[in-house]
Image 1 (cartoon, rainbow over the protein chains, first blue to last red):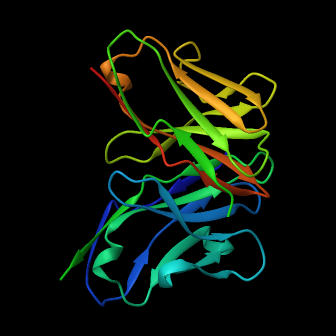
Image 2: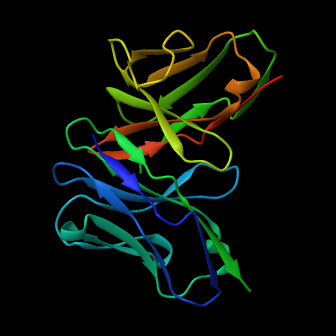
Length: 113
Length: 113
């Protein structure tokens, strides 16, 4: 079965600074990988996804993520964060055989003015 | 993108009563839907896989008799929380997959008093 680890529970960065959120996955084959964002009391919004092909994936709101098979990682990056980026970020891994998606525990992003 | 609609968005019920939550795929057919539960400030935990025309598959530790899932058509899955108790209060989210991409409902906040 697949699993996801997000080692950072909280991350605080200053507005305008760069951001990297870590994600490691465990899966026996090439997985589907996702990053979602959730604002308080809201549903999930898909930021980006990796299925195959180019390992550097561009998403919405200026986010990108890089799939590194050798490290089993799919870290999320943004060159310059905005105060509106403050939210909870979830990395998720999907299994190709049954579409089941498993979420990491999430990383809460705080933005300093 | 595809739309998954969840109803109701929020519900308050008395302890001991049952509550039904609906999940509809509005513009595509979904043979498989998923139900998640999210406690405050925690991640989404997969509860069960809802399969159209057959029994749901529950994750380990999820009470089948407590959380009844019915997937009677290709566009509708329902989750019924039976004999609800305050500890069942949570945020419930459904998802449906199309072409390996998951689309999430907006979630249902259940409060049991």
